[in-house]
Structure formats: structure tokens, C-alpha cells
Length: 204
Image 1 (tube, helix red, strand yellow):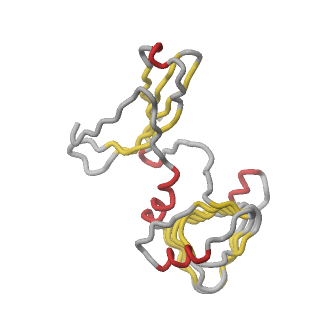
Image 2 (cartoon, helix red, strand yellow):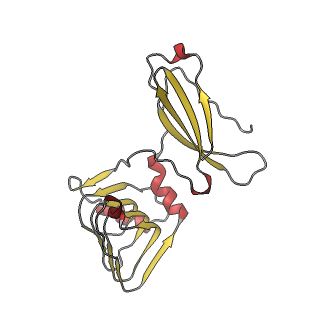
Image 3 (tube, rainbow, N blue to C red):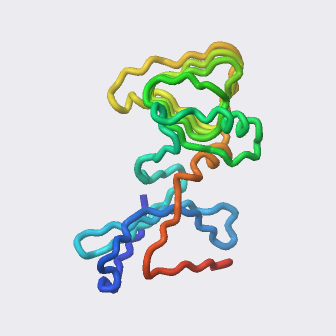
């Protein structure tokens, strides 16, 4: 991974401030059709701040920390009405991040990012638009489908045995980058810093 290192000047201007963090964005150079995905990370080593640009092109990724769920189950409750309405409306912007600790049977169709630490079961025509991250296996019964991204067996990374997933009936599991993007929009944010400014250039 290529890095561009920036050493911060004027350390007196940074005193008594915490500016560490990571920001992602897309650089759109002139005369290029595709943007360049970049991340900028600020670290502090002693009294010196160091900024590093990471090129996220060609599948490179940068770990930006844990995913913060909108709803955690148990504790929270499944938003049945909101999920059913969102799944029925392809223009919906309701894409929550839901974490379920343990095994889970998907109660309704829905949208967003669903993180299940145990096993996930889908029955009947219950479908999903967005991202499914499952620690153990998936059992899918009936005629249903997923549009977005599905990953199971993640607990293998923890050294746990995970059985193979089971699919009964007719399935349509399609990767959809638009649904993935909708499911991850709440995971990034701009942070306001004191003694800074923001400019917007149409061209550069």
C-alpha cells in the first residue's frame, strides 16, 4: 500500500486539541471517469501529528473500527412495521444496522445491515436488501432472495467450527453494490474540528 506522509507544522496551533481520526472520501481528478477512494488518518506520536493517505482502490481496505449498531437484540426490538415498509419501497432510505447476539430467525423481510453472531434462519418468502454478516451458518427455507452482500461463517476467524449453510427451495442471492452502499452510509461521518475550515472546490 502506497502512503503519503504529512508531518504537521505549527505544533503550537494544535495544543490542547484532539484531532486524531480517520476520514474516507472519493477524489475525482480531472479527465478521469472513475474516482479514487482514499482514506486519511491522523495519528499522534508524542507531540507530533502524522497524517497518512491510504489508497483504497483495487479492493484495498482500511479498518476503521467497530460497527456501531442502530438496534441491538436482545435489548432492542425488531422494527417490524418499518422493515416491511422499507422492503416494499425500493426508494426507502431506512437502512438500520441491527446486531443480534446469538441465533436468529428473520421475522420479516427488511433492509439494512444485519449482524448475527450465531446462526441465521430465513423461512418462506422473507427476503433482505442490504448486507448480512453471520457468525455461524445460514439456513434458508422457501423461495426467497437477498440483494446486496451475504457473508457467513465469520466465527471461523475466532477459531470456532462453523457447519456449512443449507438452502432449501428456490434462491436468488445477488450481489448489489447499490444496496451495499445504502447499508453502509451511516458508518461514515464528517467530524467538526475547532480552529479549522472547510472549502468546496468545483475543480482542482
